[in-house]
Each structure stands twice: as structure tokens, then as C-alpha cells.
Length: 110
Image (cartoon, rainbow, N blue to C red):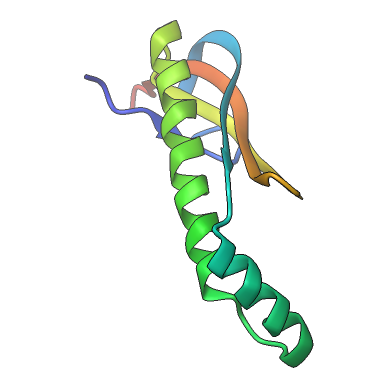
């Protein structure tokens, strides 16, 4: 399985795009457990980081990137350029979307 390079830039130094496949997405929605919700309520009163939510965000981000890579690979891409994140919170949970453009890149001839 070929590794998928993820870049937040349009170009990757030392490479050139040989094919563009289009938009790809990695989506996930994570539910908070009741203890995190109670903890968050207390933290809004006294302030400070809500470590359970931070862990949830890291986990959701990793899942979104893995799914983004899977979509890109299914199209035949070996890279995703212009990758971005979007997130939102709702009553049912926290949603994270990773998105970008799936491309095939090749090393430049030196």
C-alpha cells in the first residue's frame, strides 16, 4: 500500500502534480460521554482545559485524516494537497471534516 502524503499547501517542494482526481473528505462525528459533559459543565464555571475533550478532538482528527487518505488512495492518488479541517459541536457530538484535493505527484528531475 502506497503512503499518502498530506500537505496543507498547493505545491509540495521537489514534486510536481501529474494528475488531479478531485475533492476527498474524511468525516467523523464523536459523541461525548456523560462524565465528560458533567466535567465540561464544571470547567465552564472555574475555567481550564477539558482534557477529555482534547483527547476526543485528537482522536477525531486522526480518524478524519485516515479516512481522507483512504478516499484519496481509492481514487489512485498518492497525495492530498490543500488539506484543511473543519469542525463543529452539536448536542449529539463533535464533528470533524478533513478535506483537500487528491492528486498524483512525482519527484522533480534534478
